[in-house]
Length: 95
Image (tube, rainbow, N blue to C red; front, side):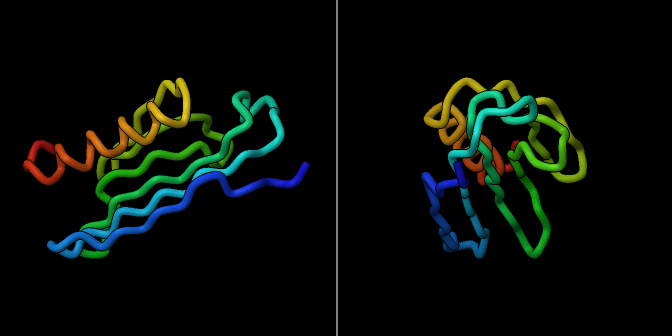
């Protein structure tokens, strides 16, 4: 089975932040046990401020600036909600 794009959205916020989300359906594997590959990112002034992904053989994880933390994937809807919650925290200056 080839990968299938499930969700794509890209917004440029009024302040210039770029918020982009890509989610694919992929074959279930050891590195993608839920059959999902994702890349969600918020870029401010050319720098990634928030990122959620499961690429590079690292499993599910998120980035705040240059720091990386594990991410506990539940489902696609929760993933999107968690990411948007962090984008809102960034807008409020909490990240």
